[in-house]
Image (tube, rainbow, N blue to C red):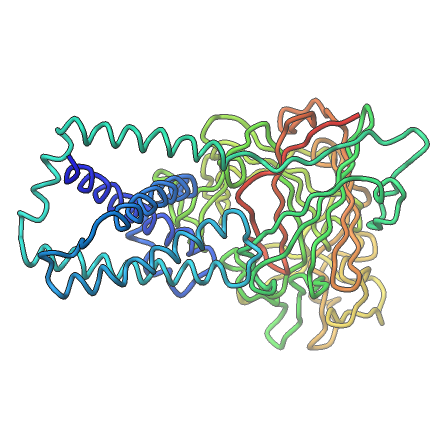
Length: 508
């Protein structure tokens, strides 16, 4: 019986390690372009939940093995020296991997925890290859024959069932969201949406801080986001603050060269700009409180077999249950001047249109009646573009490297339609890539008010929306819904993230 127990735990450990490595390396490709060569052999789609689940199984197997080691006098009897050395190395490696994995899950702000976890996993991969390969060389087919007989033994099935119960309990315990108290805004208090947290109502509101990681350009890819929320009987107000060393507003400027106009970019062609881009912030709201963005994250170059691959190889956002997840997308250049956030949503994957170079799967904007911004080029090409409009006035400050906030966005009516004969701007001149229409977003896309200010290395963002917009694409704000936050440091898609959601708890 003891031997069957040991063999069962060993088998579960093998399965957990393999699943953890495959899903973990896929997740690591979000931030490690140097390992993209592994992409073809890694699973695609929703890999975060299986990764967490396999990590829990491995944790239980690891603890069981430690208990076994404490009781057994000598577990290396009969093993070759080669395997004894490998096994002695595996114990500290798995210890580091398990501890760093739980560190990412609960304490992602620990310095270098993601890096330690990655290199521990790499070392475990080498151990698996050498350890299992050694047994295959020594024993041939007999090295796996015992697996066939293992699962017909009743006691082995009992152990597997017990482990399943323990893992499900551990899963439910770790799935619990972080609660955020949402108090009622007193009648004699009010919120001024100006990106300033000094309103008395905000100083009284309770806060929660979530550690986000995995973003481009942030120090070690991390930033902590502090969240506060208040409500009236009609509206909800949110305050978000996060550290960002730089105020990034230099958003894809158009530059005149001897060959014509071009967009200054370093990845925008692949929809993964991480240099010439604005700061952004995203909030996801949903009744679903699944890990990692309510189950909308599907990694890999082509997670949808019947849809186009994505350009950057990272993945898509979409839902698989036919429902929608509300997403507010604040943009420091494109929407902040309008005092709005772009009201978007994640839904089922859309049909592919050959007219669109970028396939966005389930990422959509709400509909609008009018207003908003447009990009100041007719058709984007990597080497050359034709501007839509030129400035009416000469002598404007068109140097995006020194322009103030207002100079980074043009008003449609301060510019005239582009004509080559009217283009007398000198070589090296720049134009803003964003032009504001005469009004804000109107319609569903304009439901979210938002204003952000950057001061002393920190963004402060205030957002407000009606509790219920009655739009099919918006999440009604009520007690018990969950939200996730992501910060972008002059990056197009490489944002920070966190695993467990924040749950709104309505108070009196």
